Length: 181
Image (cartoon, rainbow, N blue to C red; front, side, top):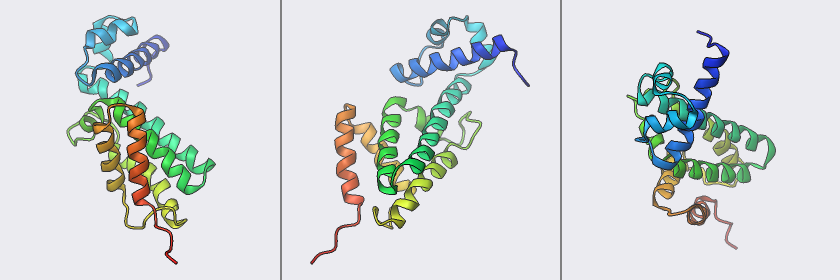
């Protein structure tokens, strides 16, 4: 069903407001606060998103789509090793920002209308395989390794600078060591 222009605008305002509020407060953020920041009433929020999970799914799907687009952009514009590192930095910041939203949306029972794991895997594979084939990354590293490492860093790092350092140290361990003379 196609939404009227005003309904589409309200939906977009709600998703934008929810993105900000969830980044600040996490997935249990106040729905009333989201409606207030969007400049609409709670009834409008519930007409567009009958459940909290439906709203959270819209927020997460938008953020995940952008992250996947960035993987494609990096793949097209940077050498394989650099593209992968840059995207893993974006993935770490993404995980730090979502305050548990990603874990909630990756569950099989989530309200997400897309397969979030498949989207993330496709984006990562588009960067992982070329980095391995070009000799920048160990061949035994897989998608799950990358997601678990970045998620662990995101959960343990108190700030982006610390996350950046931890990711750099981790990636150094995933590179193919230089040949010994």
